[in-house]
Amino acid sequence: MAKDPWDTPAMRQWTAIKKEHPECVLFFRMGDFYELFGDDAVNLARDLGLSLTQRSSKIPFAGVPHHQKSNYLQKAIDAGYRVAVVDQLQDPKDAKGVVNRGVTQVVTPGTLVDEALMLDEQTAHLGAIVFDDDHHAGIAIVELSTGSFQVFDGSTNACTDELAKVGIRELIYAESSMGQIPPRTQSILDALQVPGTGQPSWHFRKEEALEAIHQQYGSATTAGYGLDDSSISIRAAGVILRYLRQTQAVDQEETNAASGSEFQRQRATLAHLRPPTLIDRTATCTIDATSLRALEIEHTIRDTSVEGSLAGIFLASQTGTRCVLRTPMGKRMIRHWLSGPLTQISAINARLDAVDALKDDRTLAGALGDLLAPSATSHASQDASP
Image (cartoon, rainbow, N blue to C red; front, side, top):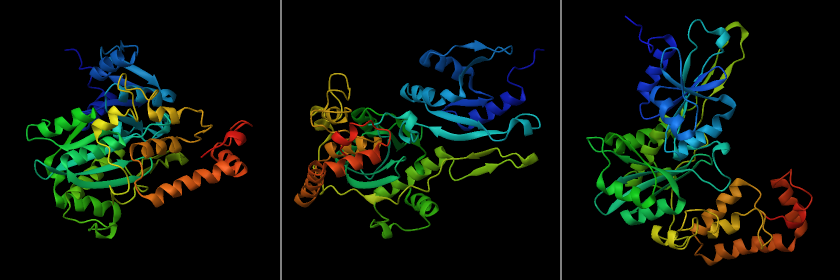
């Protein structure tokens, strides 16, 4: 009888990890490559243009060089995949038998933190929604790279508008008992044109939410953050924390000290994630999802391109306003400002005063520009702007 090609130490390891992350394709580190096996290899070879081959075991196989991981992760996410990155957890020369491996990160559209995976002007907001009834809901929104964490309670339409305004890239929802997307959730996903990620309904209970908040911040109540434990958005906040802990393999460091090895792996962390704060709709204009699209603030209607949109005008490297945006954070802030114009006179005047100060004091503007872009060429000091 022919031996099962999957019955080898490495393939048994791969199979065990795949069972823990069945919704993901595995980037499985083997030496200098991240390798893909079985259906993962077939599907990504087709969608990412990889070379598909077979090992002597007849298992479909493809691979990408480890130094190009970010490039292929971005392509996989853009193609609609969730990716579990499986790294070697020990120095191979110290391994007795198969190298110990484990998932160090699950990459999804809403959990991108690597600057190499995002365009300068992109944000990667992750959202979660909980429904109270047919007309009322609560949401939580996280931007993992900056640690921003916000919640909001309101009508279902108002919550949808908030999700649209920040441009979430992934929405967590409570799946039905049959694992299906509930109709009202599907309508929101269609309106936002983003992928959804279902989670068990028990994750959305108040008790579970407060437990997740306690684990993250050491507080069993949200009153210290100006929130109400009974608010439905607190349940969304708890769900999003649980999801991040599942996908980010947080706060763990492993060192293999055998034979004096200095091999070390640092996992992702949520220590920078700020406590949730309530979104204040009184400070900015409310622009619903339909109006955001019609006004072409972030994308053109014709081809959903940033180029040609209002944001695209500001995000160009240099425009007729002689404005040079120096950092990815600045570009993202511009998108945020355009999607939520200020309504309070004092805040508007403060922003205008800051612009005037830099416009009138070109020495100050040049010095600030040089700090933000140390490698800028000599013309930066003449045209600098925050």
